[in-house]
Image (tube, rainbow, N blue to C red; front, side):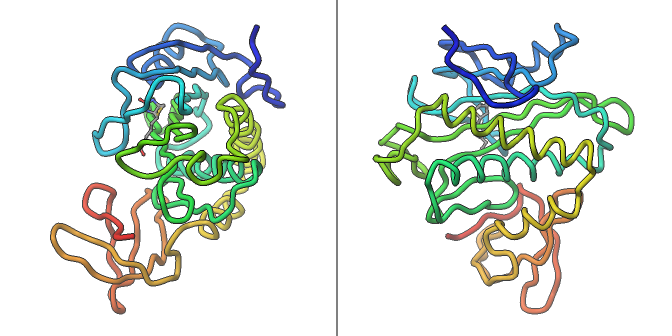
Length: 252
Ligand code: BTN
């Protein structure tokens, strides 16, 4: 019996559960290639043999303990230059989902890590298929640490609060519901301004001094913008500089 029942029109109405796979993002890509009606399909797995993270890192997770989730969506309405909006709405949806389950002290760490009490509980890996100037389709990959207690990096929902820690399926349903609302804002109402405002409100270090590291140098700076391209604009003692994800890290 399928117990996964998000309260949505499209997102998550089709779903596939795998005991194991290489990466749920790869499974979602295959569904996009094979099936015209892929839009809104969710793939979840108990275990990934080759889970992938940002910057070419691997994403490790013990079997059955965490959310390993990918969503296949039609993004042909988006220009390539607007692709970072997918990152914004996904991090907002995960933020809202975790908050709706009773957690607080949540923040988004640029570009799209989800933190509680400044510790990472999950990450997002978006992979786009492009056709000319527009996107064609996208895979939204989300990994959230839920029940795993021994983690090399970051934390998990159970370590933050055992009493309100949700089931993995419940968390996935909430993510689908919030994601669908943001997706409609992006596609139909073109509410770019609202999305930007919400993202900046929840962005760790926005207009606040934080410590960053570039190569071996640590310095204090304020985030003053995230460009449409997704690049991070810092104010370092009055000087404005742009950074991409590969060259800068946060010192939290
Ligand atoms: C990050 O590095 O923060 C992003 C992690 C994204 C992990 C998820 S787990 C489900 C999906 N499948 C993958 O191989 N990666 C993403």
